[in-house]
Figure (cartoon, each protein chain N blue to C red):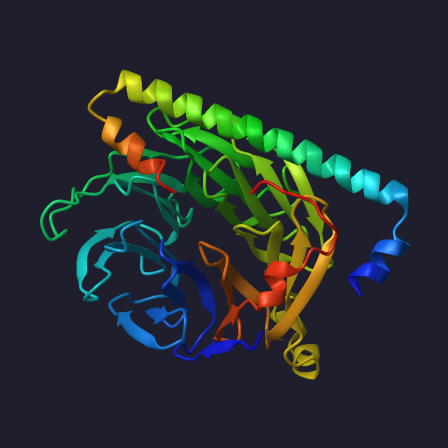
Length: 59
Length: 334
């Protein structure tokens, strides 16, 4: 079924989807960097709260 | 994907929530009761009994130690998850419509309704985690009255002191809880009441549902709308599926159409949309009335929906759900 669908969708649509996914992944990568930076800067400022910062990163 | 039917509520569900491990599912209802269930088999573990009105909202902390609930009896309650004991009761002039823990379990935010000369208010309580939990501060740490449209939903962001709110007008906003000021807003995030707001695991983006029949994905930092999922029914809830690129949407026409409802038995569907491609990928039927609340298991192995019909349905995903790549080999970041 999946194969059948694949052959039906145009190359244009596939390119469109690929672009959407690439944009999303690029944005996610930026987000993750931002959060890591923010947590790091907070951890440095609030030394006593450093333990909390580490706990948050476990997941 | 045969659903497990959780029968234990006598009236419509208002909110359901998994704990951090996903082994427990909490549900609250217009029948004044909060229930907790084992998510793997649907057995009821217990109830939290004490509210004297519709329980509108619940949240459980990340350690599954404390549960908070907000009710139409104007109370915010703190419960011991393990033994069902009520640890503390806060009383307000109006109903509590939404509660949420922050990410380190140390604060709870709640929205109280605007009614009878009382302004809608947002309060933040510091939760004292020492001892047995019964020694709580009676006064909020912060409180403010957001001006303009009523707030309907709220949640903490990953930035300390910054909360997200959704409003009756369709607005989505960021508030600084210390100053009570609106830091950022998107007035046109939705065209009608925001009914649900759920964050991604890292809280960097969030999903809202609205009576305007759409669900939308927003950037937490800028409140920019990233994605829109347009359906043909007012939506009551929207949830993100962890580890799969889907969002789950639920809603349905209100009680006005009861007569047609009985003819379309079990036709109220949870809609699965592709999070990034904004295309609908499937539907799961089941409820006999509008779907009021949806939650996905924290690792995405099952989801639950709570309906106007008084049932909670838990669906454990089949192997095929995890293998399926409806749009080919796309590698999508969560």
